Length: 413
Image (cartoon, rainbow, N blue to C red):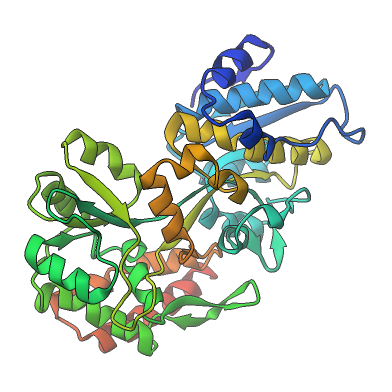
């Protein structure tokens, strides 16, 4: 873990913020926080832990300087991105009273574990009207908001424009292009597979008005079984892949021009560009049932430690980092803003890749954020057996749910 950095210099603000802003002044104003509030105490010291490394860390550091100077406070930013204990270190430290006031760079699906442990404070300054419904739901646990969204992420369809001039929009068109030019993705991974599972009618945990029910698992209902059959057919019927095909293999084949389509997220854009592939990105085509694909939505967040002794100031700082920081995080590393108004700025709407991911996000479903999701990830190896044909989609789906329930029982002791 790197040594913490005390923030006292205004120069860092000028360098890191003014030099990276590609958004217009008007677009940034959409996220600019309100002026200084009298109820925010002066002279307090806050600690921020960041699980984001560079280049986002520099932006976060500069934002903290700006906020601290405006409020007459001081802030220390600690880089936790290299901590081998990951997010679990937060739990250990917070329980011991040694955690930060604010945490930044934690994906929303980790929130449930810490909320259950009583280590997250409700996000008292959160305004759900700034976000689309899936993004707001991603930070909601048992009907209450517990974090501030910073950026959003999901997968979509990558296609080689040298082979496929127009991205397929229907399943019939997709099959035709995949048969001719090839297709691959990380077929053993539930994260990628959920685009098909959710679109065909399956679900992880039943959503009851914003509260996920871990006792109602929909990975073996009619829609989920149909989705597993569809995934299996990609190998057994269409032969686009074989049971040993992984995401790494599919990426390699796509970057070498051996296949024309690939499902992934923004993290693979750089590798594809380096390979000089004429890349196009579009929403995943409608599925055989005519419904849209539903990839998982991931939301990067800022949150407040429930055991912070400076709750008012910490809430204000977390909200400021999340809202005011969105344009800057986008400029340094293409982290798509979570605030809807910022998604419609010229900077983003002029980028076809960003537009495609945002279009896909409209049908995305937030990754479940309750602790029981850990048992789902642990049980997903059964998908490989379905793909190989060693179990039928129906038998595999039932085994999947059975293993999840067993895992949850073990998890709960």
